[in-house]
Amino acid sequence: MSLMSFVKKQFIDILQWNEEGDGVLSWRYPMQDFEIQYGGQLVVRESQMAVFVNEGKIADIFAPGTHKLTTQTLPVLTYLKNWDKLFESPFKSDVYFMSTRLQLGRRWGTQQPITIRDKDFGMVRMRAFGIYSYQIKDPGVFFKEVAGTREIYTVDDMEQQLRNQVVSSMSAAFGESNVSFLDMAANQGLLGDTVKAKLIPAFERFGLSLDSFMVENVSLPEEIQQALDKRISVGMMKDVIPEYTKLQVADAIPLAAQNEGGLAGLAAGLGVGLGAGQVVAGAMSGALAQITQPAAITDDEISSKIEKLGGLLAKGLISQTEFDQSKAELLKKLIG
Image (cartoon, rainbow, N blue to C red; front, side, top):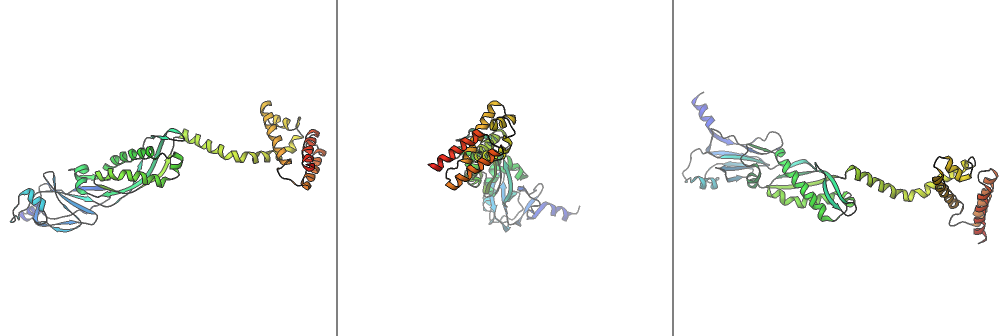
């Protein structure tokens, strides 16, 4: 190895970070057996910051740009080193480059369900998932609170700490909102904004700026979700069942004549049992009464209904008793 090659390896004229790949937040320039040339250049690219550290203490911080390293550009380090104005020798210092790019598409989620108090369901265990983005805002704070003197610090190293903050803020947001799970699940944008407001101070404590926070999904445990689905189905069927029953009666009337006992016999013949058969028969009879006795009907319609009932009786599709009862009701409406 030549003398010039040896000297070249000992002194650094240009410090820079090419930032190859994604996911690195902090990178320490390799300084072992190297010294920085006085008057050398520090190149800080856009979306980067550089931090000079002397004996574990932060000295100077540089924004993007090309900086000539002198006592004028390193005022804090000059003070710590007790350099006079004539200092022009190589010097030793740790240099850390920080990436200030937005860390996009970071996923968060509750690995375990979190328990919240809900006004509709009481105590429920909820899970939630989404994405967020952030960036380094204060390199000095990030160095002191998070990265320290590590050679490299990545977004994956930061992930667990941030996830814990998200889960804690999520629980607090639900606890203080007094909004039911059903309403909150339908307003995930509002939930995201609420949680973001709570997370901002926590991120700032690490020297980070929270850029966005979104809730993509809020879910309940499977057993509660099944109960909720059943409750929704019952609510929907309240309006559907009367019309559905009428349709079933209309389809079943032609079959009634083939079953002993009329409508009750039909229900029993379907295998629903005596008690259930009476219930079904009652429901079907009630539906038949609604068909033959609408709330508002004209005289011509009443006469037409009686004629149709007579036709059903003649074909043996309804019994004489059923015909007489329905005819009497219709005549009562006709006579008034």
